[in-house]
Structures are given as C-alpha cells and as structure tokens.
Amino acid sequence: MGLRLIPVSFFTLIWDMKGRIFSSGIEHKKARWGWTFIIPSLVFFSLFSFYPILNALYTSLFRKKLLSLDPPRFIGFDNYVYLLQSPDFWNSIRATVVFTLGTFVPIVVFSLIFALFIMSRKRFQKFFQMAYYSPAVLSSVVVAAIWLLMLDPRGLANQWLNFILNTPGIDHKWLANSAMVQISTMMVYFWKYVGYFTIIFLVGLGSIPKSIHEAARTDGATGWTDFLYITLPLLKPTTVLVSIMSMLQCLKTFSTQYLFTQGGAPMEPINVITLNLYHTTIRDRSIGLASAMSIILFCMMLFFTWLQFKTFRSEEVQY
Amino acid sequence: MDIFIWAVLIIAAAYIFAPFVFMFTASAMPAGDIMKMPYRWIPKGFYWQNYWQGIRGNDGSFIYLRNILNSLIVASAVTTTTVFLSALTGFGLAKYQFKGRHLVFMMILATIMIPFEVIMIPLYLIVMKLGFQDSYLGLITPFVVSAFGIFLMRQYYITFPDAMLDAARIDGASEPMIFRRIILPNSIPAIATLAILTFKSQWDNLLWPLLVAQTEEMKTIPLYIVRFTAEKHTDEGAMMAVAAIASIPILILFLRLSKYFIGGAVVFTGKKG
Image 1: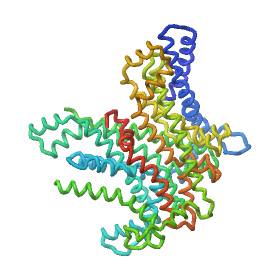
Image 2: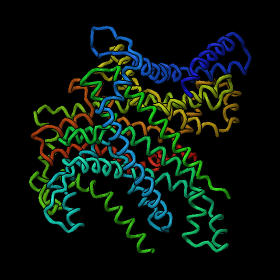
Image 3: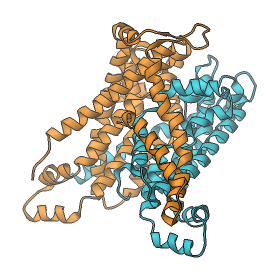
Image 4: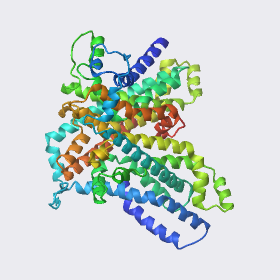
C-alpha cells in the first residue's frame, strides 16, 4: 500500500506547497506552519524509508557486488530463481519458520495464561507485571550471552533438566545437537518476550468492562464458561495484535542466533534468513542476492500477517 | 485452584529471575566456581577481578570503555533527534488542517510495516555514499526520527485542547513558540515514553552497527559483547561482568521509570495502560 502512494503523494505535496506559499490568510498561514513542521520528517522518510525499499527491489534484479569495480549487471529475476533453488536458502526459510512457529505460539499461549492469572490476583499484580516484563529491558546480546553460559555442558540448564528428569550427569547438548540448539534459541526468545506480551494482554483484559462479567455470572456462568464465552471473544483484538506482533518479531530474529554461532554453536540449524542475509552482505558481498533475500523475507512477513488476519476472521464469534 | 495459580505465578517469576541472578552472581565469582555443580547462588565473596578483566579486555586495550561511550553518544543523539522531530511532526499532523495531511500520516504509518532488515542494505549503500561509514553520523543517521514516535506523539496531541493554542495565538505567540512553550512542556509523559523506548532500542542495536562500525574504536556495547564472548580465552566470570555492566544503566532506568517502559509497550493497543 505504501509503495503505491508514493508518486501520488509527492505530487499532492508539491501541488499543495504551490497553493500554500503564494496565498495568504490565517488558515493558509497555519497550513504553511503545518507543512513546515512535517517537512523534515517527510524528507527523512523519503530518503531513509521509501527510497530504500524501492532500491532494495531494484537492486534485487541486479548482480551487484559490494566494493566491486564491475558495474552491476541486470539479470531480471535470476537472484530469486537462484535463491529458490538453493538448498542453503531453503534451509534458512526452514530455520526461520521453525523458529517462528516454535516461539510465537508458546509466547501467545503463555502470555495469555500469565495475564489471566495475574488479573485474577487481588495482590501483587504490579509486582508480577514488572517481574515478567524485566527481561524485555535487557539487550538481546546480553540475554543471549547469559543463556550461552547457562546452556553450557557444565551449566545450569543441564543441572535443572537432570534434576527434573532425575537423570544425573547427562549432557543434553543444548548448543551442539542440531534439534537442541533450535530449542535453545526458542527458549531464549521465549524468556525475553513472554512478559512483554503478558503486559499487552493485561491491558486488553483490563479494558473488558466488569459489568459484562457480572452479567454473565448472574446468568449462571462459572469461571470456565465465563472465560470461554465472554473473556476470549472480547479479547480477540488483543490476541490478534499479540499474535501478529510476536510473529513479526520472531521472523526478524537475529541477535540470539548470531551470538550463539559466534560462541561456537553449529550454524546450519539456526541459520535464519536475517543471519544468512548478514553473511551474504558482509562475507560474500553479494548485495543483489542479499536484497532479493530481504524482499523474500518482507513477502513472508506480509503473507503470514495476512494469513493470521484471515484465520482470525474466519473464526469470528457471533453473539 | 487458588494455590495452583499462585504456584504457577511464583514458579514463572523464579524462571524469569534466575538468569538475572545468574548473571550478577556469576559476574562476582571466579570462573572455576561458575561451572561447578551444583551452582552456588550466593557467591563466597565479590571477585572484582572479573570486572577488571571485562573492562580491560583480553588484549588489555580497555576498548570497552570507548565502546560504552559510543553507545551513550549514539543512543543519546538518536533519542534527542527522535523525540524532537517526532513531537514536531506529530504536532503538525495533529493540530494543523491542510490538504494531504491524512495521506502524509498514512504514508508515515505505512513505514512502520517496513522492517529494518529489509531496507538495511540500501541504507548501508546510502551511508557509504555519504561518507558516513565507520562514524557516529553513520550509526545515527538512519534513526533520527521514527514512524512509531510520530504515531505516538500524534495520538497524544490529538486530544490536546485547541483553545489553549488559540489563546496563545491571540496573545501573539508564533507557531514555533507555541510548540516550544506550550506543546513540549505539556507532553512530558509521551516524550518520556518515547525517549526511553528509543534509548533502549539503540542500546540494544546490533545489526546496524555490525555493518557500519568497522574499527574497534567505533563499535558499540553489543558488538563488544559479541567479540568478547567469541574470543577463546574469555573467562566466564568476565563475560558476565561485561554483560552486567551493559545492563545496569538500563535496569536502573527500568526500576525508576517502569511506568514509561510499560506505557511504551502498550501504545499499539490504543488503550490506557
């Protein structure tokens, strides 16, 4: 949508400016100030948002190397064809999708549960809210570094899991085994963001009027039916929001995977698209190819967002 | 049921806190103790050598201090420009009638949908062309204003009483003066929310500095942590000391100003948190 608007809006902008600058009157003067206040940001967005997205599309059609003296060569959709035939890129798509599904679904479920539980308490609401939110404050690199040590073969994660499973002395290979390292990245992300989304659910829950719950109770609803038929349907906008926000967040994941691979974890299982994109840019310097990757990532984000809207709508509750 | 809920909440809180406690306790222990089973949650003493080692670096260059300074400079600069420009633009969009303003607002809003990762390469090319590579300008430029910030400020200003602005106009105040004397002082909560969110996201930023900062002198805290973690001889305690140093400023901000952190988290719900 944004893309289609650019030429039109530039036209209206210039046209408007002409009308405003050469006429007078208090309304026009005010309008001129309005434009003056927004022009700096508008220039910035043109240069650092609209132009780059068009440029990414454009560059993705070229064979272009960073710091290379050869002029970029137009190759049409060859970069996309190459990527869609490359096992390495498919692995990245797999890693991204697995990570996203494995992370955002638990985040949505648990943040909803935590929010409901916190809401049901009369005391310590504020404390739990703050406590659960606190990991989101830390920088992702710090979080990844802490977990890197906890997931060490001699670290806490093994001690806890062995305690729970009652299997002393087993190494669960959190950072070495290809399935485990994927689970590890999901755990890190889950830990960091579950509280953030709990807060959003709490706001959603708080906005449901108490009178509706009271009415349901007088009609004989118990805690469970009240939740199922009152809370859940009324909470749907919040659920959609949390679900889409957390999903987009997961699709963009980079820091955890980057630090883990730098810290010695195997690359292949967690080579998510952003990590691949970074390496293609910095190591291979193939920015044409990297641009095509970024466009594919963008399309995936748009597609999954659309898919979520669609799924949620088909389950629309009528009452 | 009641006890079950308390149990879940408390266990979850313990799970949330454990890595924090681990970071701080491990930063105060010699490396040999950190990997010992079972983990000693209360350190025997304060092993300050970790902090010394972390700041000194494995090569003894003390570059971490410079990297902390860089993070402070970049995060403060970005926060200042973002708050100022977002407030200015948000005000312009909320309180002035002119043709095309809805279109402009929609355009700016649409850029929220564009993830940074997607436009990163063109941005890198622009910054290189401008000659800002490996400089503060390069680290700062792509973030001087944010669409999210404009959205936040506009929503705040739209409810601001017009009567107050008109009264100021009758008293002869110019529009920039209205912005400086009336609008800015009356939007401290929104400004604080935006400032904290912006500062935090820059403190956290990894991908962009990875591309732009090439020399050790221009790197920021996250880059130092990555490098320090990846180095072979890094001792676990020093690693946690470095992480703790990076986290303490933001944790203090969080404890003092938590309502603004939480306020920022719920902006998109359009409800009062």
